[in-house]
Amino acid sequence: MKPPQPHAELFAAMREFTLESDRYVDRAASLHGLHRTDLNALGFLIRPGRDAKAMTPGKLGEALNLSSPATTALVDRLERSGHVNRLRNQTDRRQIQLAMTDHARSVGRDLFMPLAAQLAGTLHNYTPEELALVQRFLHDMTEATTEAMENLRPPESSSE
Image 1 (cartoon, rainbow, N blue to C red):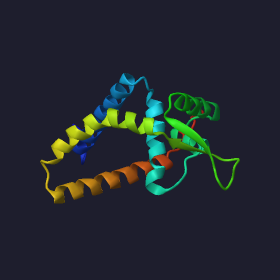
Image 2 (cartoon, helix red, strand yellow; image 1 turned 45 degrees about the horizontal axis):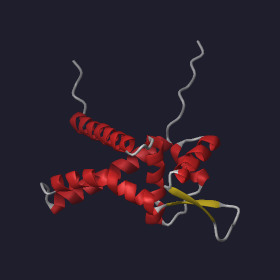
Image 3 (cartoon, rainbow, N blue to C red; image 1 turned 30 degrees about the vertical axis):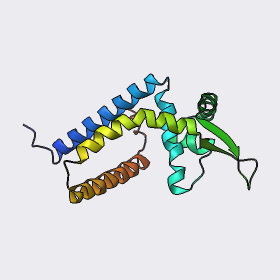
Image 4 (cartoon, rainbow, N blue to C red; image 1 turned 180 degrees about the horizontal axis):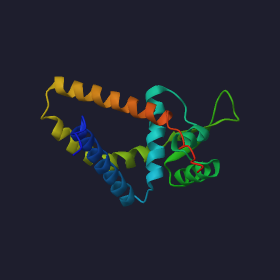
């Protein structure tokens, strides 16, 4: 019999939360005729407002692990649906920056306000100290996940 893995229940709970979050996003997106990649792109586009880094098509493609043609198709689709505007960089007119539209923000609110309200109701069950700990935990787990992703390497080919 295998010894119990440390933190197995915690990892299982994190996995369940991730899976249910993904299912929510997929369902909410489908109700608005959006693809998962569209929502992931909008999620990355909303980040520049927080850290003042402009998002370009190249950076978006890299963030989503898309080829250049797939990124162009994605940005074209988001622009046609009114979610994104292409803007010329003021200092380098050759560079294109992507900006979310008010329509995209409105759709985002429609998609995620029900989830936010449900989650906020649950947060009332925790003290400020517990919430601070959870916030620190999620921040640390996100950093650890990002680092693990950056350290991923392809498997070594076995030549037998």
